Image (cartoon, rainbow, N blue to C red; front, side):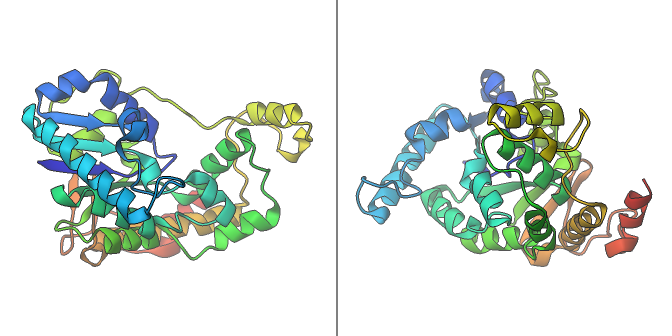
Length: 312
C-alpha cells in the first residue's frame, strides 16, 4: 500500500487541505484513496509515537503505536484502498516552539525519526509543504499573538531574519531521520496553497479528483484590526501594532529581503536536486536532479527576484 505522510508545515494551507480530504472521504475512497487527518491522528491513533508522560517506557509506547498503525493500514487495504494519505502538521513540530526558538522546526529530525519507525512497516513517502519565510513567519506571529504569544520585540525579529536554519536544514533533518527508499516531495505553498485538489493530485498521481471544497480557505491568520482588539482584551496597548486593517507584516524591508533571499536559496537547492534528498514538485510536474532549471531560475541570490520584489 502506498502510504503518504503529509507532515505540514503549519501556515501552508494544511487546514484547507485536511478539510478537503474529510469532506471528500467517500469520493476519494471510491478512487482507492484513504485519508487520515487530525480527526484520526489526534484521536489516539498516533498516541505514543511521541512519548506521553505516565504511559510507561518511551520505546514500549512507540512499539505499541507501530503495531496499532500497522493494523489500521491492513484494515484500509482490506477495504480496497491502494493509497493512504496521512495529513497532520503536528508531526513536524509545534509552531509555538518555532516562535520561542525563533527557528524553523529545530526538533524535526528527532520527531520524524519516531514517526518513520512507527510507519516503518509500510515504508511511507513523506510530503512537506514549504512557504516563503517572510510570509510564513508573519502568519505564524499573527496567529501566535492572537493565541496569547507576546508581540515580538525588534530583537526577536532580527533574530528570526538572521537565523541560519532555513527549509534546507529542515529537509536535511527529515531525510536523515526517515531514510526512505524514495526522496521526500516538497510542495511550495505559492503553487499549491488554496488548491487542495491539485495538491492531492500531485501527491497521488491521480487526475480528475473531486473539486468540492477544493478552493475553500480556512484558519486564515488574523488581520491587524483583530490583533489590536486581542491586545485590548488582554489589557495591552494596541499601539504596539501599526495602523491599518490588512495583513500584519512585522519585519523591516531589509529583513523581508533577507528572508526572501533565504527562500530563493532553498528553492535553488531543491531545483538543483537537493543532493538527492528531496524532489521539488510544481504544478507542471516534478523537477529532479539533472534536469534543466525552471525558466527564470538560472541564477540565485539578489539577482533571482529579490531586487524586483524590493521595487514592487
